[in-house]
Amino acid sequence: MLIPHLRMYVYGKCKSCKHSLRFKTEAPTRIELAMRNGEYIGCTCPSCSLVQQQHVNSFRATYSKIPQLLAGIIFGIGTLGGLYFGFFVLENVRNHYLAYGACSLLLIPGLVYTILHEDERRRVNAFNQMQV
Ligand SMILES: [Zn+2]
Picture (cartoon, rainbow, N blue to C red):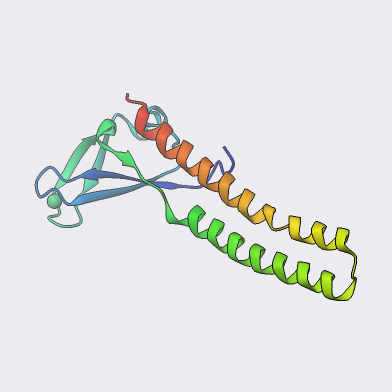
């Protein structure tokens, strides 16, 4: 777990109007969620205002946008920065090994992106697979 305390949204459905119920939690799995909040979680529907008890198994985790956004920004800035640095070195230093070295920095944002994405995928799967 790379970002252990990042909260994620889990989604349920209103029993009356099927509007989606959003619930923010730090729990990585349903079991953990049940331990923290009880097996039935009280929610109020934002659409029809029905107060209801939802079983933890009826909640599903989805990808949060924050790690994806973060990864995208790192990817964008890192790639541009790496390219710029690579060209700068090539133009001014005329040392090809150094330029290759600078260009290999391009691999880092891609790697960070992959790690963040994998971590998020693992987290979502871990939550959705385990039932209480
Ligand atoms: Zn409703």
